[in-house]
Length: 303
Image (cartoon, rainbow, N blue to C red; front, side, top):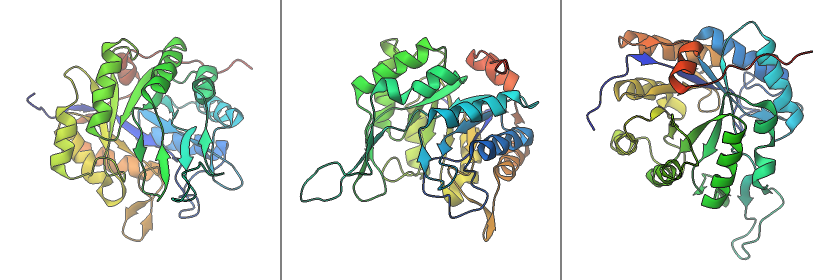
């Protein structure tokens, strides 16, 4: 399909992620309070959407504890800053093989059923949650992210029943192929939202030829964003806008503002917004994102 530059762009900030970055920068938020405060600062800097994982407040290691998600959600909703909340549902499908001699899941593995994997989504009811649309090897030697078609169908039905918009996470063209099937089956309802995840070993590399192959596999009428990791994060803010998409930045994907300078989430959002605006596009608001994606704004929890 012919591509047209997007003139009205929304920015997503991926606030903390689940990678082992907690000891590499003091700006990576750990506690629910820190995560919420960093998300609110990113929203004030121009992010219409904040994508949140949670971590153990003491160690910084990734967590699936419902109480942490609940606190992050309540703190963001109780703030005076409007932003669309996007919670991950990517945890709970992790296998670590400790030896190539015996392919047995080791103690670091974390495998959960569909109900458990989406329990925080069902309770917290964010406006958006993610669905990693495929199984893949990651950079670590013997780690596999597991998302079978049956598991994805089950999770997607539970997300939709909770009134949450699904953001498909696509790490390769095959993930888009599966996503199209889930949409065709009605498991993922319209309007469809997809995040193109570029440069994540060993998914789609972030060269422009591969990126355009991903973009060209997104059906007309779908809404999409894209990101890349590390030093290519800001280049992809420009590339995604130029190719007709939206933008994701944040400490989940990149720790640096420039060489030798560690970033905050707000600084990364500000840099991305400057790039988008200097290209002649406009950064749109949370209210405009809700209208585009048919989202229901959630009220603060009654005390």
